[in-house]
Image (cartoon, rainbow, N blue to C red; front, side, top):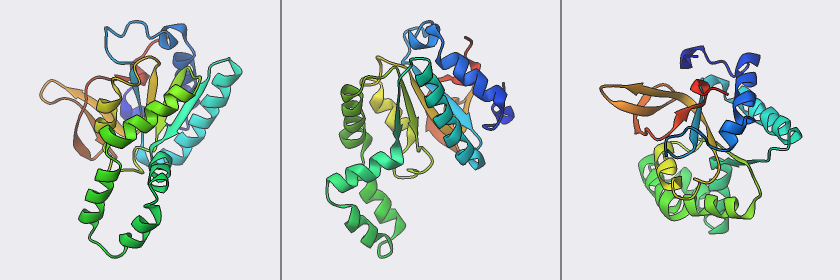
Length: 203
């Protein structure tokens, strides 16, 4: 199934995701060749609302099958971290007063994947009994959080259970440039190859 053919509304896509994620092969992380258990679920950016509904349906159906899903939305987690550090209101006040680039640099610092985001995710993993991690909100946190930086910093903490990343764009591979996460189908500079396209996975 080519990325351009994927429609978040399609029953075929839903059935494939449910079959793969609920399979013993997926849950036991078999056949990965020592790679980290990261699976990219690409979708068309304009279908973000449909994909949110699909993620919710998947979570409920998997729970009915005895499979626990931990869902982490990067945007919601970012807001939570800013509030915990008591700088959320300050950020809101600054938004209309400072240049976008300065605000971006500030957010990149206080939400740095290595120092802040990955440790917060690791804590949720430790505190939760789960079988699969769903990671979403990738588009909402761009450009101050880049998906490949998050994945690079999660390789050591999210390696014990499979992770599905709902990605608004394409996960492409080519001999010339290797693999990249092409956010919104336009940004081609996020080099990341240690993941599998879940639509290419067999049950």
